[in-house]
Image 1 (cartoon, rainbow, N blue to C red):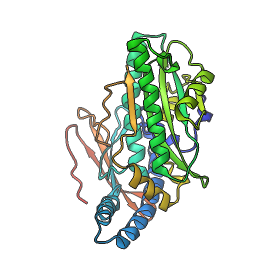
Image 2: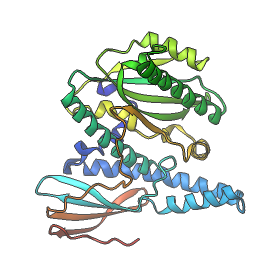
Image 3: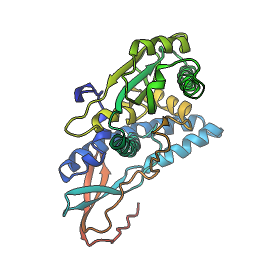
Image 4: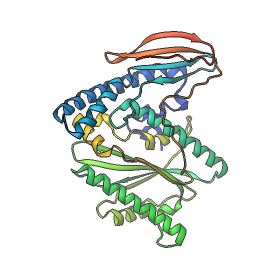
Length: 331
């Protein structure tokens, strides 16, 4: 997949991957984080207004708690500039970890997943060079009911994976999914005024090209109402496979496409659901819970503290530190 094939917003995830940690990208990262934080402030105002209307109800309490976390998320960002190796790492922040409400946490969460699965891919590729990655996208037709449409997609994809397992273990009922030695997939939801459009992006590792048209026929037989499946080989470029892989690990909601009301509804419907899955040689990859970068404790650094104020991050503190010295930030 060429770089230009990626939809708007994917760059946020790729630039937060290890390839995006150099000093030259810090100002660009801060601009992205500020835009994400500004969108989170919009969501915060909406969540608070709905929480007031639902005051005294269980859902109102949940909304109140979500708003409290969102209010302080990203108020400060602490970076370590490891000037001897040219790396800048985000090592301290007050993240709310509500990635379906907060674009900033969504960017960081996607970057962590990208890093973890890329590491597994490179390890597998070194042992089995014949394996090639394919981006496989499954869609179902739009509908007005997010719960019904998203459940339909999840159950249909589960059926496809069960067919693969049955064929490989019992030789029963061939499926194109059997060509995948491993896969990782994520669910995404959009709504551009024509109903809810849930879909799943998957990376399949195969030695033989999946037949898109056979897979479409199989998908239609499973869903009963949808045939659209897209299969693209993923190609390496100057940045490796990161730009190709990021389609799967970008955030589950395209925040710029959603009104706050729809964004909140999607959070209420999807929170608690597992939106990332895997099988085969991708199974068992652990994505860190922490959204901060791992510090390089053995190296000296310059501490850079930024605070969010009126739509931008402003440098608040600069301090040169020797190795193994932690800076404590309050607030």
